Image 1: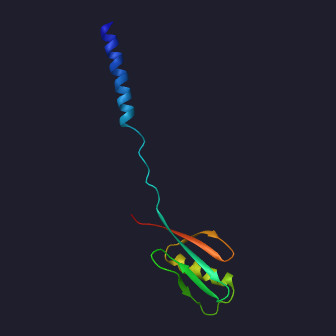
Image 2 (image 1 turned 180 degrees about the horizontal axis):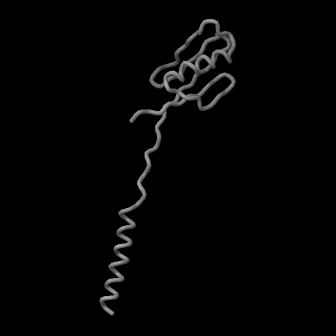
Image 3 (image 1 turned 135 degrees about the horizontal axis):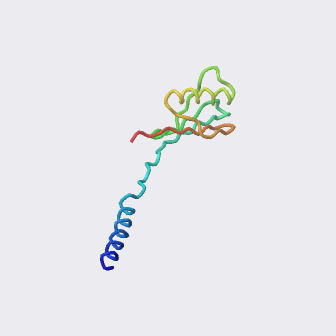
Length: 100
């Protein structure tokens, strides 16, 4: 009887010990950096807000309307690995995964 109780206590302790050691591991969280491109109607320029840079103004040639300007900016940033996340009538929010 004594041996049975000791064996049961050891089995329960082994189960708890195994459960504590085999916990689920934390998954790494994806890190992103964000950029905004804004069309300024009064000056017909694209205003880039990229990480590490202040507002950068670009006036593409032959582009008059905001749809053309935002499409141009989307194509240019897509070449660098940016993906559009949110679209507005005069802005586009982009994100890009950060290398660790």
